[in-house]
Image 1 (cartoon, helix red, strand yellow):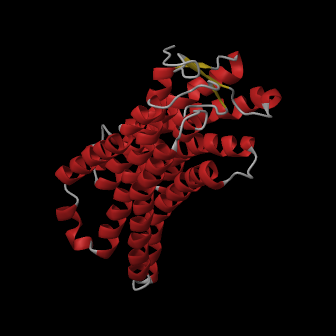
Image 2: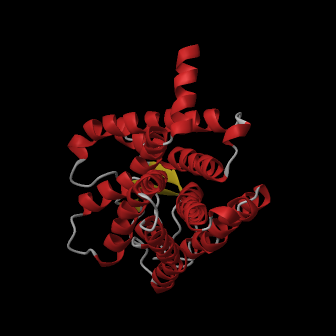
Image 3: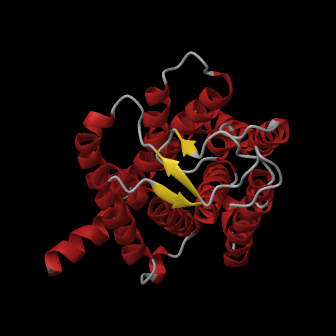
Length: 311
């Protein structure tokens, strides 16, 4: 603890209290959370195990799916084990620097995932609207560049956040009403002006998430116009290839947007509802992504059947 005056200190640790108002039910809440975490690990690991060794699956859509699985695995490992420790063992203490690292990874990985989802929308747009240019536009070097851009984009925009948190004075409490360290959840307990944090968080959301959503919407608007000019058989096939991605987009962005707006404008939303949605945001997309693509993608289904048959 470092002091500059009688009221300022930077705590060595923060206390994550879990879900306020639902402390009695936290053990029971942890059971489906644990199941979802196991399914996340198994599902995303299976996707990587199926795609990476098979050169025939080293196509843009599957490589983007592999990126999504890696991001989901890292993001889940960053948050869920600590949440389960809070619920099971009342281990709610987190070191100040560890908290900063956790919030950096949570938000930067979220932006990386948004970039990959945008790239997947672009992949579908080229495949359906400009199929003759597909192999020349989405080359292996292009995919590598997209992966690098996703990493740099997420890291660049989130790099200032730990420093913005570190500059705040925590003179009232070190108790965070949440299950993990999230930028505004940590900033809210500071007793100094957090206007810079709020403005920066909103600016980044508009520059990254809002832009990605707009670009994805524009891509799918063009796809829909093209699809309805096709024959019924070709239309069904095109929509079938887009359906998994649309599902993934919805389950990724809806809880994220609810959590974002609830932090800033949802003052009348009960705190436990907000925290439950924040947990759904980090649990459901990583669990569902491999299930959706596994169920809807013929090549992955075939590979799963072959693996099961051999075992």
